[in-house]
Image (tube, rainbow, N blue to C red; front, side, top):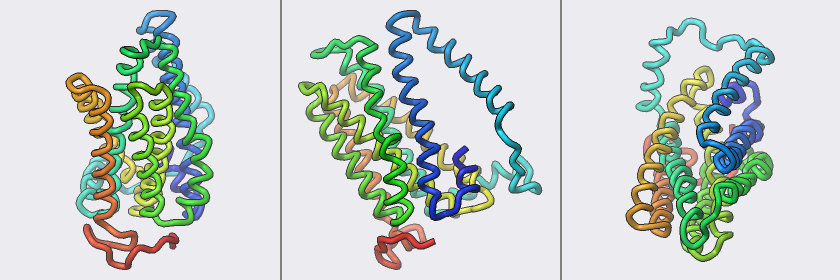
Length: 291
């Protein structure tokens, strides 16, 4: 869906459109957490999977019924060649590599936080039920409510670097609040969820806006390359978050997430907004974005 948005929307409004569509994705994640907590509290946890199965078939039916035909952009490329070219973008596009590694570490913080949050709230000193824990998902409304405005007035108008510096700082603020007050301040993790989800989603919109300019006729392939990094980051974040929480607790888990965001700062600052090579700041640091 997101590469299709990149094809249909003009560059000057691409971030806004991506943010609107991504709001639907975020809303799905939000209600998934909420519904799973309610279902697990009042019935068998296996019913969560039965619901997911039914929704998958419903999606197939809706797409088959309502999704309009869209002509292929490339008709002379075999499936095998498509897979090969996905790999070649990793060695030919500095922008894609930069965005992919940032996505890797940012989504590691995402899964690390949401996985270990359940451990924190279900144990001492809170002992919340699964329903009360699932209500924390409502903090994820921030990118849905504010994302289109941020995309319209910041990402669409200013450079990727300027937009992401703001959102990374937002994430750092949220993680600091949640990590260092979460053991005694029940609103701390909720504030972290609000700030962190907003910062992460807006960083992703800014990065997607940048990578969709890499290969206008192969946006799906570029998006696939980017999502490989994102999914690997989610796996790593879950594994590391669980391990660190189990051995050292909530505060150190949050500190590790701060390190992940710190790596993203470094990755962002290795290349300037006008740099065409792998590392450098040729062209300075323009603020306004020029297509």
